[in-house]
Amino acid sequence: MRRMPLSADTAQKLAAHLKVPLEHLMHMPQHILLQKLAEMAEKEAGAASENGTNGNPEKNNNE
Image 1 (cartoon, one colour):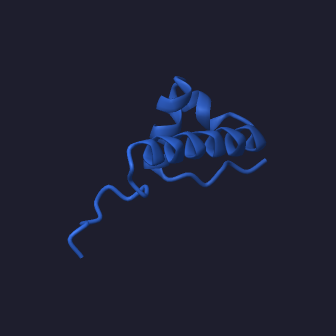
Image 2 (image 1 turned 135 degrees about the vertical axis):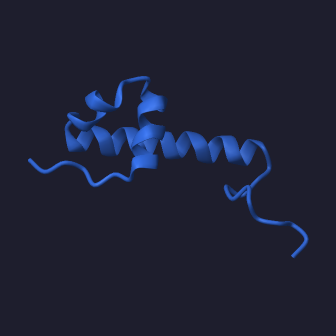
C-alpha cells in the first residue's frame, strides 16, 4: 500500500491534533488518515467561524 502524500506541515499538524508521534502517523491506514484529516479540518473551520474569521487570518479587512 502506498503512503499518503501529506506535506510536512500537514503531517505535523495532524500528529499534534491526534497526539501521536509522526512515525505512528506515517504507518496509519490511508482511510483512517483521511477521516482524521477531515475531522481536524472540520474542527478548525468551526473554531474559525466562532472567532468570526473566514479561515484566512492573513487577509487584510481594509481591502
